[in-house]
Length: 154
Image (tube, rainbow, N blue to C red; front, side, top):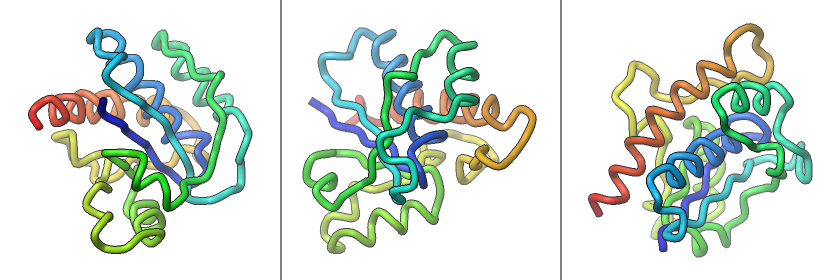
């Protein structure tokens, strides 16, 4: 059983989108019984809330449902519960790794390290306009494919 946690700042845009995209990919691959997939935020701004309506709408256009997800805050114990803790950007990588000692930080990585693209981080679409949520999904789809390949090569 592989356990994967996706992490962004508020857990209403990028990380629940990553959770939903990865769940969908794992399901399409027939591997859902081999995974626990979750998401969390480094901040408590939106704990208990659904993902941002714009994230839900963009995902739904791709046949991915995520309105059942609820935001929560990442905690130190997540480093004991999960095999992979994947941050959407450097700031949130630092935020979550600061919760634990150096010997546990090896479980954390950046989402875009699993994709061959010019993007080092998944941009935060929350304050943007236009197709930011579509770009996030495009990046997450590529990175999730790379992550699944990485997990299966271990």
